[in-house]
Image (tube, rainbow, N blue to C red):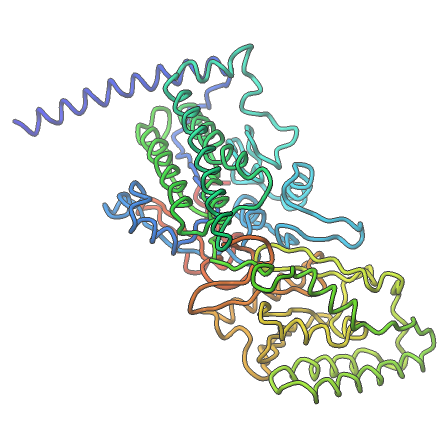
Length: 572
């Protein structure tokens, strides 16, 4: 009797609550001028992406009590939590392009350089991101076709978008708001408005206090970017509240596919560390919004939805290169090429080209004799490649020697792409050695640099202090394996091969030093936790789904592998 009475009361409460939400969101949708989606029995899906949260750090956050709702979903057995490999580079542009379109070719980092245009590319501006989206989406249908994109980099072919960089000229969420409709969004819920204002003020004051404290400490994590306080208020409060509201409106509308990204944790983790209290507090606030979205999803007011909570990549604790060595990576490279380079002429005749090759080979042999044994593998490898490369009947390379000292360095976390403008084409390591004979050895011997990666035609060469790895259909090691400190060296090698052959990857790719015991990398940006390269949790993202939907992610080696799973499940 008691059980039936309790069940009846719960049914009444659910009915009243459902009616309340239906009336509330019906009024909002009407004011926004947004249409209801066509009735469908096909399940929709909602993807909530937490930028930069690794599987390892999510488990730690759960244990520390900063992700209580997500922890409850897993502990109750409702949701399955799995790690997955986001691939290289582990950045938001590469990951989102892979998930949404199944293609992230030639996205070598968050920032890179295009020799043919003499232009830098940074994945921050709408025009740049739109151009990338147009390229990777060519001939492919995004998983958000007919759906909505909120606070993302790419729109995944969504019909409706808000704060999405790749959505130029697409319909915006507030585009149909009539008159004071935008204000009405908050008038309809004054508590939400007041809460957002108070949270924004609190976030601002908290950030000012923390920056002052960091400056007094003089050591350790501290945000140094101008405008960081404003950025923090926007990402941690204003954007978070508006995107949560937008997702809930579209769940009521019955939109078939919804994807949103919360950036607040990532921004703070970069500056304070992935398990810093301030970053974990941002995660706890995101956890609350996940609970709100999931509560409305479960009511199935218009259609049933599957919920995915995932990250695009992880984050590894870092020490900024400049903090450790009192110079930036660019300063180091400038010193190496500016002080030690020999100014050579562009020889025209075949015989002079051969003499130049012999001279370089002899010089490399001398270098090999004068360095300790592990580093000797690098000049030895380069010397062989030079002798193979420059033959008597080979024409002189079309280099512009007036630009031989123009070196472009583009950093993305613990990875850097280095370009030599002496050539408009991508350079082989034998050609780089012809200009800067000791550069690669000098870089590999620096304590802040773990890997120096280049190519010789189709062969990829990975150099470290202890040895050289050649990748050309095999896995040939001279000395010690540079990738041996990683859990899966073969997978890392395959990812490096793919990355190195991207048209706009650097002539050289550098990876900051990595301590596998402390799980700390050297970061080429001024960040205390970073992602983009190899080492630590930065490549290991997570995915949470309802248990009956849990996909096998063991075979996922990069973000593009998730696209066919979404496509097959939802008929894309």
